[in-house]
Image (cartoon, rainbow, N blue to C red; front, side, top):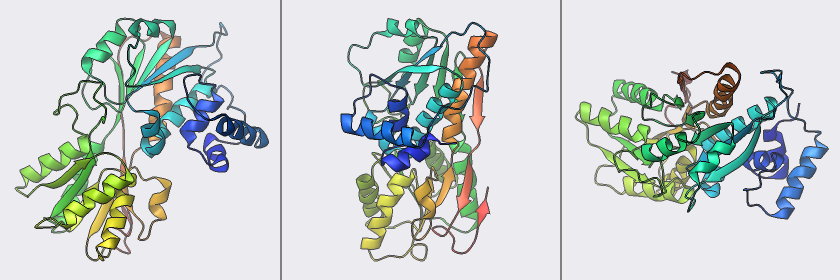
Amino acid sequence: MTSIREIARKAGVSPATVSRVLSQDKTFSIKDSTRKKVLEVANNLHYDPRPNRLLININNKKRKIIVLCALSVEQLNRDLYFSNISQGLQEEANASHYTISSFIHFPKPNFDFSSVKNFDGIVIIGTFSSKFIKRVSLYNPNIVIIDEYRHFDEYDLIRNNYFELTNRVLNILYQRKYTRIGFIGGYLNEMTHTHLSKKMNIDPRTKAYETWMKLHNLPINEVITNWTLDEGYSAMDKLLNSSNPPKIVLVASDILAMGAYRSIHLHQKEIPTDIQIISYNNSEVASYLVPSLSSISAPSYQMGQAAIRLLHDRFINHRTIPYQLLLPSKFIERESSIANKKNRI
């Protein structure tokens, strides 16, 4: 059966773009030529949404869902972690005969909070202020929040265990006698519209690294930047030029890691002989880099699916008690952190 991922490969666009085109999202800005190409590829591959496997909708009502996303269109498309969340949302919504009829990226000036009452459910992706979420909930209580690391008792919440797994990986490195451990990461939200304090905007991977290093009385050597290839390159450049360069670096996304690879190469250093790398997200490119990239894999696609299923439970079973879902990540070790040895945590 044809998937959105297959269409994306054939059309040369991201899965998130395919999902938005196929769902006829009117808020999505895209060239007509690109939209036409996606539709042609989908037609040629005989794409058809999977049959409804979650329910037989007794009243035959087409539920409408609105997505509020703390990332711009550009950020969502370039970040494989979030684009996979979006893909999981779209495909599960199609399978459940629901419609994601609005996908709003922030910042959005003069956003009308009362508009959310026109939808059956809300999915919030990324980090917004507590005040923002509370205001949304006043108009619609059917809310699922994805990728949020604060604890909300009153909303459905889906997250991965990056914090816990980062600690486990650091413990393994410590057992291997590593003490010069660097870190490249980014803020939870590059935007300023959510009014997050600096403390609130700390990524759980960064927080785990800083806490663990302090606990073990080891020097923190980190660069916090934006989530792009160029920034990954610049960040690694800073670490390599520091007075005491790290021997191993945790890099908070595969995109940043690819930029870091280039910097290491231009410094005429070898991976993993001179410096080792462990990344996050485990995108398809990780196993094709040379040397192959060790990466912590999060179930981002499944997080998107789970959001629709939680809304489904609210719609059909009238559930009001909030659920908190923690989906486990795993560490896939490849050549970039220890040659010729495979290990999973």
